[in-house]
Image 1: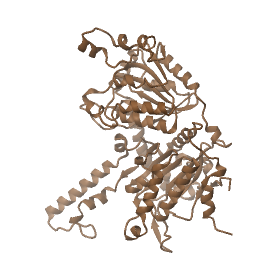
Image 2: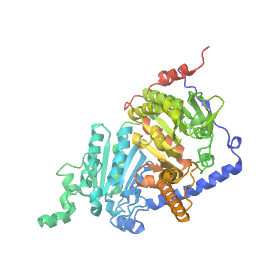
Image 3: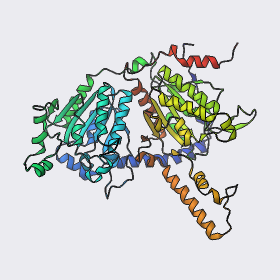
Image 4: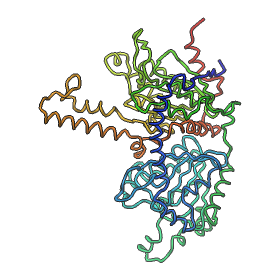
Length: 575
């Protein structure tokens, strides 16, 4: 079959959810999303109004003001790594967003990755995890082949924490390796230098294809203060490495401009010279269309309690264009949904965990819990993932998983082998993958569903995501197993010992619950961004458009010759 047989999915809210439940779900989620908005605002303020005023006094814009003026008017910025270093203290100081903004932004109609030092936070210094955050953004750009724009205003390493940023395989020097890999792959890099650009900060723009300097900018291996101390020379940093030196003499920069606005305008003109987006070409004549059911209804579809079920098909119906979807292998591995839908007019493959109870194919007439990987589901997902890779279809993984099936029968059925096949497939896929941790992301199921260790281009969490090997209560039982009976009740009758065990189990459970907090994951870069449910559709539009923007970067087969048609044909009844 050459035609992609998209069919309507989903129902109006009142057909599957009563109004009281919807309101309860929405109220609980909106409270968490209010917290998300408040924390974003805290990060966006940097070190506050005093430091913003210092930047303005120098006649410069803040990093966020530069980003706002750089992007196309009326378009949204999609920031990644907002909560890196959230809740961490370095002495008495904090480093909001690790002192650097990394964001997808549309410039002259093209998606770009913008990396901007936050000059309100220690003059744009690099803190612990700043290099890793920059490298993650560079890797996203490399995998998607979208241009990188550096807005450099960086005084180098935050030296009191240098032992956490300078050495190591992903230390500050790895940024320059990523610069080189981007250049080798032909990914455009444009740098605007707006102020301090010292030591490693001086190297970051040099490999870029275009380097623009303002009259206040300088790029130096060592600043004036260090040279005064080492060589007793009385010079300013502008004397050593200002635009007069690097534009007129060393040729380390291409253009000098009077101020920030002029630099940003020049960067936009340079981006305009690049090839236009291939998105319209890959839509194959389709036009972008919103889902038939509003995406913001997801805030009432999801129960905040991870133990309660919902209909995964209703989630898909609120994410894909016109709520049209082609489900493949619907009668096999019922705990999993695999299929294709359009987002922004572009084809994406989807893998989602069903919730609740599903028919047990191994035991006729019985039910088994979904949200778990069983033999058929694993084989189904692996086959689908391979076919999407062969066809060049980017994949979205919608995770809400408790892990793999366990026990004697699971081992007899060879789940280890089937799981290894799936892991191999996801490890070797060349197509862009985006993983969304909706609620539970537990155990080896998190790995098998293309969690961050399997290098999706982007991993998103929600305010109710729980990322862990196992739940806090389960882990507490495992940790105190020798002191519990078969019903997990405490064995001892001694009141003091019993109280000690209860306190110990409670402490383990509380610690694991804290560890599962999505902001903890985001703080230590175990997820790329925390997003609201109502924002998921916009993020998938971004993923789709960036995946298809670069023409000729990767194979994207015509839908008439997809391998998925073969998978579908072999699963249909004969006659």
